[in-house]
Length: 240
Image (cartoon, rainbow, N blue to C red; front, side):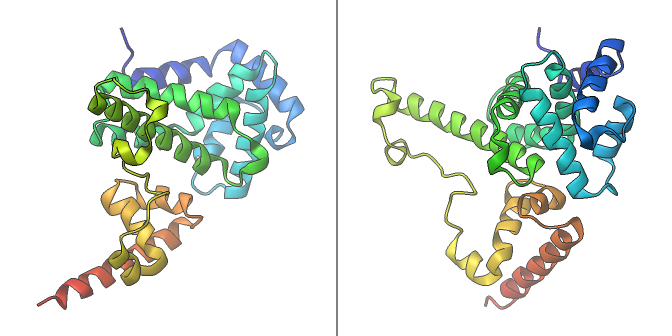
């Protein structure tokens, strides 16, 4: 029987309080300078979830945890558990949007989010990443949507043609938001804020989540989103 989403988080939280987890944490802490100020798992998780914590400091911690998770070391699982707990608010948002998009059954979506997150964390090339959290969450959601689109394409074709022999155009796949051309009229009206509006108003991101993806502070994301909404209201008021 598949565990409910909240039960998975509860199990991860409980595992982070065990003696073996503390021992794995100590091993990571000795090898990663950015973790040395934190003497126990609870203090580290608190720092990662605290909104007042410096974004650069959080990013350095996540980089250190990913390095530990990718190492051939017994403490790798400890680092992976830390990462899942640290990213949980973002993963929960992906799960909710996936339910809204009808990407699968509830238990399937939960397991898919976790499985793809683990894969992304294990394979992430830190040399090509600036902001770890935003990159991981974006890649997980992108992969889930693409997988669903491929399944829809196969169903449409009835399985008579090998998927690799069919182009995305022939399958009628929808481009992902980050790859798609923005609607011309919206981009013309809002400029750089068009993508922010699409993320929040259409795709269900919070303003904070969209801001992280676009490299904006929480305050800047909120200010620009409100400004864009005013422009949209003014434009609609001018329509005869």
